Amino acid sequence: MKNSLCVHVKVPASTANLGPGFDTIGLAFDLYTSIEMSFAKTTQIQLESKELEELPHDKTNLLYRVAAHLFQKASLPIPELTIKVKSEIPLARGLGSSAAAIVGSLVAANQLAGEPFDREQIFSLASWWEGHPDNVGASLYGGIMVASMPQHPEAPIPALSLPAPDLHALVIIPNFQLPTTKARSVLPTEYIKSDVIFNIGRSSLLVAALAQGRYDLLKEAMQDCIHQPFRANLVPGLEEILLQASHYGALGAALSGAGPTILCFYQSKQQRIQLSQFIGKVMSQHQISYQQMDLSPDSSGVQIDILDTIS
Ligand SMILES: Nc1ncnc2c1ncn2[C@@H]1O[C@H](COP(=O)(O)OP(=O)(O)O)[C@@H](O)[C@H]1O
Ligand SMILES: N[C@@H](CCOP(=O)(O)O)C(=O)O
Image (cartoon, rainbow, N blue to C red; front, side):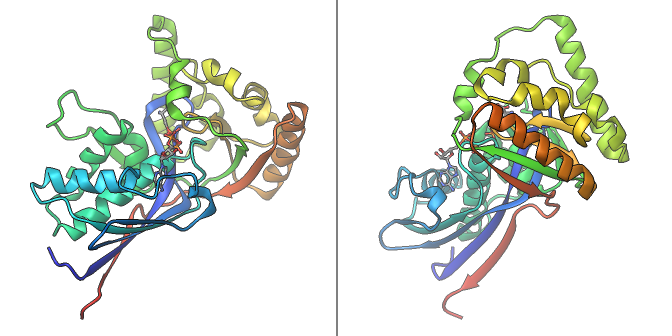
């Protein structure tokens, strides 16, 4: 461990599920959380974006807790840290802010600790902490991540990355938070066989379509019946957008992660204009204020920059 190191990491946001791939398919987006971490005499957490104002400034902050976990797992003393964080990822909107924070903190702490863990072990630590390997895998590796939790904590995460697709996403971010825990609490504990078969079929088709660039299949491949219908009551406008977006230029549409963000894939400027007008109408019917963003896939995953403040 070298006390003079300052590690800077930049981590992409992620969208999970892409419709049917519940807890198993993720995609990284070009919207970032940046974390700077160094050893200190007394811990300080500096939250440098407005988005993060509501979060704790002390050791209860997720970033510190995750970093402490890494030192503990490496059997090293838990250090005092200075952590500076900026984020473009809106909190609790279904764009993987927690996954990006967890990945960023683990990667930065791992560098400070002298790299006791390799990338695959970081992936495993992040997945067990966050619970969603598709989100954390997309943030860590970039592109598309197909992943699920292993049956045993010691086993590697069964996962495979695919290159980022040549698609853009129009992302509709309602101006309210929906914590993932709340959006999961409305889901059934059991499903009927035909619904399970439906989702296995669509998510398999989705992976194949993304791998082969068959974006004409996305509309069908992004259909879901195991989480979106149950979450629709929490997300005004979701039902109409999922049903009709393809008539207004969307190649496919889904709730992003646990919501409330909704994403529509498109390729041309014309499709984007049509979609934006349609979404504007739906959201105003529901009197929901929202922010709209054009996001593209990130193919790099986490980026690391290390500065030695002595040399
Ligand atoms: N940069 C960050 N620093 C500290 N905590 C964060 C950061 N980003 C997210 N979090 C934590 O994660 C929570 C949001 O997680 P979650 O409800 O899973 O939504 P999502 O991951 O979709 O944004 C925030 O309320 C906050 O507690
Ligand atoms: N698969 C999870 C995804 C949670 O992602 P988040 O970005 O909303 O935290 C789910 O759908 O619950």
